[in-house]
Image 1 (tube, rainbow, N blue to C red):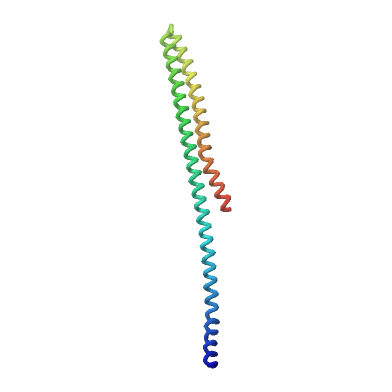
Image 2: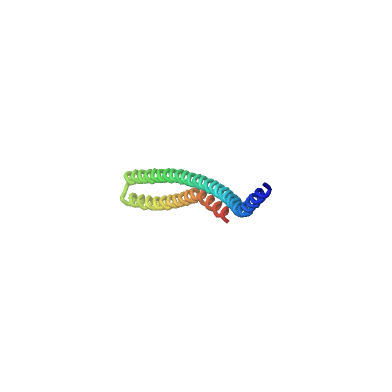
Length: 152
């Protein structure tokens, strides 16, 4: 019986020797696959976090823009009210004018005052629009800067 066991042991040892590189490759493949899976999960988590942060930045930017639009509309209504009051005051003064010369003088003064008021209102609107644009863009700029910082 010893002679029969010896060839089967030799055969078994031969199979094990032949299978060893395949088993080693299989183990290396399994490890590479596990590493790739772990890296993919980490990349997915980073992408998910970045997407959440970007969505938050967009939401913040939209909220700021909405508030800025409301401020802009309030300023427009204030300017409309001021201009309407100035026009009504002018009309009262013209109606009460004692002569055509006085009415012409009132017209000149009113036109000058309205030109100055419109110029001041235009400056205020421009400053407000610039402020709203800068404040609305800030969350997106910060997120973009963070993205570039992370990718570098």
